[in-house]
Length: 312
Length: 186
Image 1 (cartoon, helix red, strand yellow):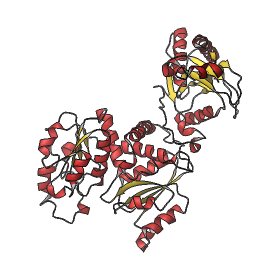
Image 2 (image 1 turned 120 degrees about the vertical axis):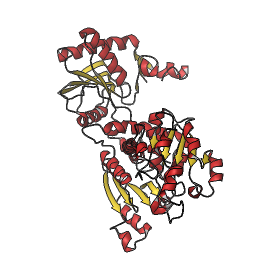
Image 3 (image 1 turned 90 degrees about the horizontal axis):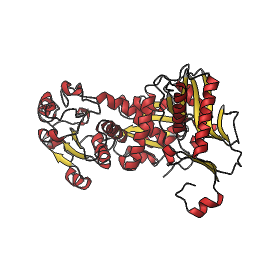
Image 4 (image 1 turned 60 degrees about the vertical axis):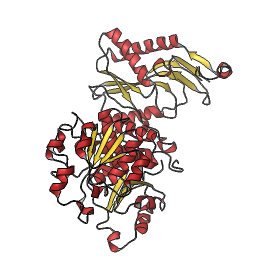
């Protein structure tokens, strides 16, 4: 693993190694001195061309707890707003001797392209509607902590699939770990061409949430991404909630103690009701602390070892 | 190497320097030394270094408990992230660090490891401990001291001093990890 651009970059075995490391990193969060020296002298840049609170701060804390020097650059207020090209921006940043580049961009494939331009290790922190590999890793890590193993377990992913990079990475990651995945969305938010992908990758699709919930071992609600919608995907927010929101009534359809995930930020009352978001079985906040541990593990495995060859 | 290697290889250049009974005797003596030095088991914490220091620490704790009649807290310490050669090797997955419930603040911590060689692991362990708390004192117990120190570090309690050439390989095998107790030099 040279970069983490897609879940395709990591094998099931490497994912379990990351999870084992993350479990150790979890303990650091409860220590008085939250610091490990593993990345001392390394510099990590968070280059965010899109808004983010939790992913950026999570990567920032992860890097700092591993003793790396972390700086944040957001597109607003950077030279990008003066018209600099993406290539010039990343090459300028990397000319300062950066070891790791954590990047979020609204264009799908941006991280892949940047990885070809620079020597630094590149971690994709979300590229357009393509992938968000660390989110998938932290979701799977959280679920594995609750379910023991994901092998043969039924995970239901619900929501705005068309615009969701979280869904794409999660399907890849959960399938790799042996889970049975069903994705649910209204027809207008089901990506075109999903039939052939689901057939090739071995996951199921459904338009009927009520039908799949009773057999779920875990439920993952996705955010309705209003900022990516030109409108017209569903008649009204109310109608979306009736068909695809995790409401109080639907909560009752679930087997007891089935973990409920949401990558955040939540649209309470739209895709997830407060009853579900605040339910005892909701793991939303645990996902945040798991995310920190998983990102520490990812940065450790990508940046701690020998720098010359950097591995395959 | 271990009993899985071919017989000719095993008989030619591998010498058993401690067998299971030698290891048992050495650990019994070391446990008494620890107690003598500490004047009892008060405030004592045994911290085993991953991997083989952990079962050794447990064995020492059992012996101390049987002599003193009170259990001794045992913890596990992994120093992977504190190593000074981290950058020179492919990334290794770190092991588990787990302190006993009472922590190590104000305690007399005895670090336990299988082989003392360059001293770099112990240097890393001292750094790791600084992030975990502030013991009243830190001591070092090892099963084998094979010399060739690269840092000003010494052991307080040694099971066996084993003069060796730098090129020789000292292997400690323990029943908990390797299925049998044995120290070999090759």
